[in-house]
Length: 426
RNA sequence: GGAAGAGUGGCAGAGCUGGUUUAAUGCACCGGUCUUGAAAACCGGCGUACGUUAACGCGUACCGGGGGUUCGAAUCCCUCCUCUUCCGCCA
Image 1: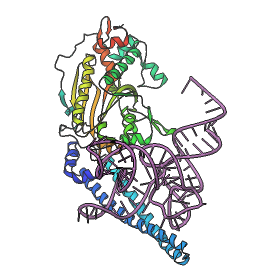
Image 2: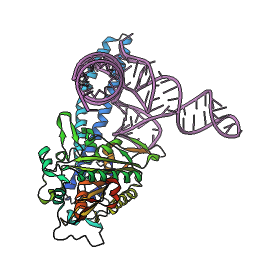
Image 3: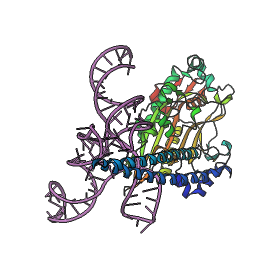
Image 4: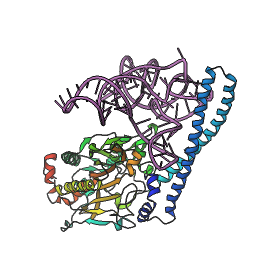
């Protein structure tokens, strides 16, 4: 979330950002509301502190009086402190209420988009940052969609997935599951080579973690919940990995922190329907390798570029046609300042499928995380957080199957052969 | 899951028969004196957040989290979490 001080000192800037996200003028009134509530909070804080101070002083005196045997006066003071306590309790609850109100408002204010973010209402308005220049692959008339190929070569059993769990939980088998494993290892090795430390985080997280990355309260409906234990199944490795840095103060020399993790991702995808959810296009459980960086504020945009290059390299090595989009104000994630999406062309469906999203959150996440660093003078500042998928597996598999299909079977991308141990799926 | 014990500032470690402890002391760290330089010794500093102030400061809260008793709680009570040990179960 944004800092109240930031909203106070840069109201116009924040407002411009909200308007880029297609907020109306009226809706932006929330900024003034936050400032007004914060003014109120400060006043309450001041009076509460002074009452507490007086109570502390008087309690000290009572102690001295008891020692000197001055019981009567002590009793008088006790009554007085008793009255102060009433006031104090009242102020305390007012303070709590004010803080909650402010936080509630802050949760409703998204990040300020970077100046590079194009104006726009929906995904239609996203800017093609880098297009696929060569001709797109064209398949013959008999071309099959990936779910047909998966059945033909016995790679994925969607029906068994339904039997065991439900729709959207594919069961990979045979060479399908080997392809899955090969991709995971390939992506992790590439991330390691690029200097990311590999971690295996918990796949369930507690309320504090889910809140710190902003999945709670706003996206509660998108997560699976293990209610009995108050745990959430992770929708992305971003949640556990970023939370490594919750309540952490780094030294400047610790930058950049680079972490990668493979995890399954669980998403309820409530409200999705139609051809979007066919086959592997949108599933409740999929595997993803995530890259996360924590950076100095001055470096984060350079680092985001570096992350883009990394993801781009993966797609080139897999020989998949791709394009990069710069998300417009209307499509930009709530918490992000600048996001690039990677889409891979799935030739049989003749569709672009999103396989990665690389975002710079600036201080929006770190403020909730309380992730800071000490500068050379020992002053504390919020760090910048970034993350990206490198990559999401299900749709990559869909694209590989469709694009590489031939009469003889499906050609395995050369870079995966050492991982998988064969050239053809047939 | 059951039983017992423990959770204190970067670390170690007092305090825990409630009130000059708003946390001793040591180590680490930073600055200074001394020294050709360093070490040692000595002197000083050394947490986080919020409020207040032009500033120096001052105030408040924080001794695992939350709640309670009391004029006053690190210290007593309740509850939750975590760790250690023992038992049970188990890949």
